[in-house]
Amino acid sequence: MLRRVSAKVSAICRKGNITQLDPKLIMSRQLHARRIEGVDKNIWVEFTQLAADYQVVNLGQGFPDFSPPSYIQEAFCKAVNGGCSMHQYTRAFGHPPLVTILAKFFSKVVGHDIDAFEDILVTVGAYQALFCTFQALVNEGDEVIIIEPFFDCYQPMVKMAGGKAVYVPLRPRFEGGKALTSADWVLSSEELASKFNSRTKAIVINTPNNPLGKVYKREELQLIADLCIKHDVVCISDEVYEWLTYDGAKHVKIASLPGMWERTVTIGSGGKTFSATGWKVGWAIGAGHILKHLKTVHQNSVYHCATAAQVNNGFNMLS
Ligand SMILES: Cc1ncc(COP(=O)(O)O)c(C=O)c1O
Image 1 (cartoon, rainbow, N blue to C red):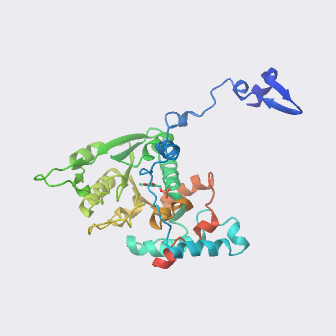
Image 2: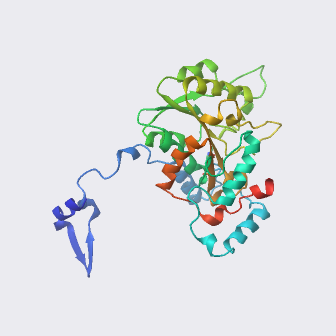
Image 3: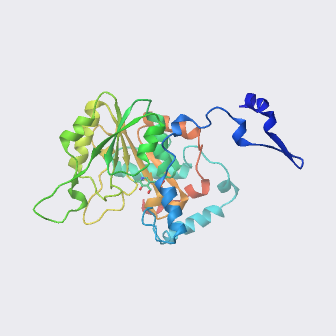
């Protein structure tokens, strides 16, 4: 870039005693990296602005219009007032008390001993956990199966990692004129199986699903698990809404099925769990041999999340 600057010296103009370069003239080569081509539009950026401009209720973004529980707010205030260490860097892959409590809590849920320091990465929201996962695991040309309808960021994140998104739809199942529920959106086992091949690196599932609200049943997860194991494919399981289940629906973690802990990255969100989306605390949980690659991306990008936001995001109260 500096080579070009000298060539474009005529583009320098003087304004008082400050030297300014015309940014349009400095570079003659293409400025942007190819990996960001086709991913410049973002529905949340656009719709949040539209909602603000026209003063309308934003039904698009998944955040509540009420405050988090008082114990969460009090813990945050305590953290902020908790001395100088709360305002400084902490461990790159997660503040030690947080990863410890997450490991203890989720070991029971997954039915597998989770190592706080090997198997967990705390991220800037589930969003960054997803980003680290795709960057760490997807190579140029790898195929990643995405189940439709899906949370929008999976597709651009796969693309930025150089992968190819392969879609498989949940289809509505009509039975006897009954009203359709989220459980009536189902995968066809043949159609799903037809998407797996030697180029398939990963499948993304989202349960409970945004936008349908579908909570995958154990049998549905087993079908996906069997295909992952058969084709040696990683499962990226976005479970940010795991505690938002209704009408008796039970959330099952695909990582808890036999043979799946070793090949699943489970993604969670403190923001969604505790109605505190603005704190942007999320995590990826999985076997250390997978998580170490996500940590490589994390340490070379964000490095670590805000210390005070990690201090108590509620799991101390739940466990
Ligand atoms: C399915 C899904 N995954 C991930 C996220 C991102 O969560 P976070 O706010 O923790 O980054 C969202 C946010 O709406 C979501 O709906």
